[in-house]
Length: 284
Image (cartoon, rainbow, N blue to C red):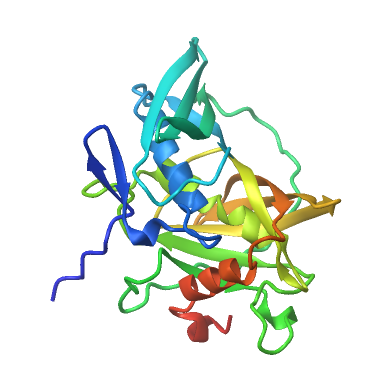
């Protein structure tokens, strides 16, 4: 029996992309940050015609709410040299700029000798695929850290370590296979909710996120381990380490602002729904 074909996030149309309902995020009738970043990354990647150019840094700024309506995306090279290429991308809606991205791509080469220091991070093992993915959720995500949460609370609602493994289960754009770079850019958006959950829930919404990659991910699963959360006067920063099944691959960074005018549990419920498949199996 063939596996069901899941609804894509976007369908190309005319000069833009029309979102399906699954592309809506958890903070009201707006597009989720992961699909905004994914479309911008897709546009950037179209300017990486040299296989030795590695997308080492990618930053997305969400300048205003992106409605669940058609969007247009464009990108252009701003600087290209022997060892690097810089690419900027924009997303517009109704003729207005709603989000933008910048990417720094570096040429791969010989790895230097020697040993290097990094703070060690122990990541839970990747999950096994369920028998069937739930077509009603945007992504398959398994949260960890629940042993520190109070009974009945979400696994990240505590002031201790938290982790997640996630897998994109549908096309970003109908008929297009996700590339490793686009998969990583969609995953890093989880940095905000992973680092900004506290004992009272999730009350920060991210204004931007950055992905720094030492190499592209291998395989469908990407893991995130929360490293830091610092906040004061309603402004927060959070960082994560990103993994694939073979080990660490890079860093995520999010800048967020307190969002007291929305129900933060809306985002919590979205993450809970995304992680429902297989949650009992891993004890999340």
